[in-house]
Length: 283
Image (cartoon, rainbow, N blue to C red; front, side, top):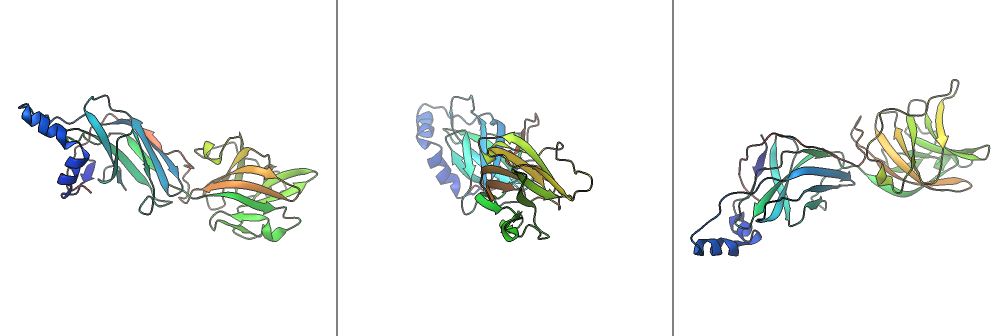
């Protein structure tokens, strides 16, 4: 059962937010609408760095004034109001926003001009925010080994031979390569416009280890995005922005949850089940 956490002191605030003047007009006409609108459908979520963007289909009910957005730590848990909007989108971010590495479920309710609020959306929508970084430089480890590796856990450039080095870079026979150790995986996802274009880590298609090598590698091509499975089963992605004589410059994103392939796009799948609503307090 999806439930809502609502604040009691908001009865007055809520009336202000939902257009109370219509309420008075209806009473003057001897009619009061207490029928809630239909709940929103097709909720979709996008996981970013300490941020989740939420989208849904606009309600077709003519008297809908806006939408209330809720989150929970469990799909069938209690949902807490995080904000309201007149649009069919909402950004959950800021000082009290979502933390990286935590799974959040989102639901949306529509409200009309008389303050009637719909049931929560029945969409299975969750996201796991993850950290990201931009314009990192790695040097050819043959020339500068101390600055040749990257540790996604530490968000830091490290010695390529460091036990926590997840990725390193070198030039060989005139070509530039991105390298991982034999207990990791890397795959070239092809050209992209942004690091955000790759939403999920693939299940297969990673570079195979050449017999006798202890390194897996693929050519570093500007404009390409690469997915990496680290030695401790975390997924990361980098987008090569520039390759120079002795270095590669890239953007990155890294999923803190082990074995989780989500690198941007959250999960939003329509369900037909209707959830009961338990109103406690609104805030």
